[in-house]
Length: 191
Image (cartoon, rainbow, N blue to C red; front, top):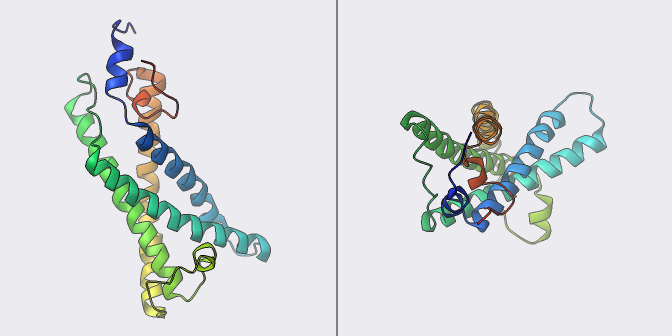
């Protein structure tokens, strides 16, 4: 594929700002780490020490992810996403936009439902409890059960969206090499 001489400059102007990239990659790493932790921690017969460590990690990192996603949405409200290259077909643009907003929404639902499950279930959030941050939800077993169900079923919808997002990123980075991945790449864009 031949690229125009002005491609690096066009790419730089259409790239996400460094803070948006930082938030994206921190959230991505944390989400990718919490999914297997969440899957493993509920296995029967798992060593209690391992299970406790995974629960502590999953609960506390889940709240951090929620706070980072909210931060990212606030930042994005004041710093809109750069436009996709004109070469991206309209249907692909539409799918990308829907996928991004669904990822944000489901990450928030996961974070809120996880927080409510833990708080209403009377379980500690070790890191936040140690900082003296009060719980926002009173203990309630029925609320905890509803939140647990929401958390469980949202995961079923979230994982395919994450895989679609990763697949699209790899498609643009490896196959198309059209600069779409470089807009959010963890390294600085060439100028």
